[in-house]
Length: 92
Image (cartoon, rainbow, N blue to C red; front, side, top):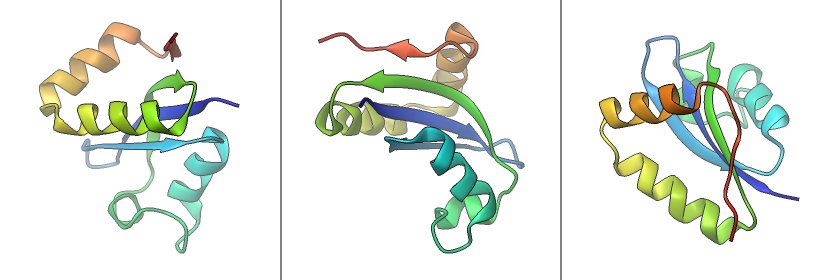
């Protein structure tokens, strides 16, 4: 099973980046579970999926997550717009 790097758009229009194996479950946690949601997203609900890309293992997903987190908001917005809802699959 792939690891997914994802970017969420929060209700205040900020962006949150994370990784998960089961993106549907994780999105539900961010929106509905006070114990399992990230503190950042708990305070900014509802969140919606803005971007996702698949990676073959946790290591590559974590490295990509870190790279996206270092981007400016405008760079993240360009990434989101360039892929417009399509899953980006990394091939290694």
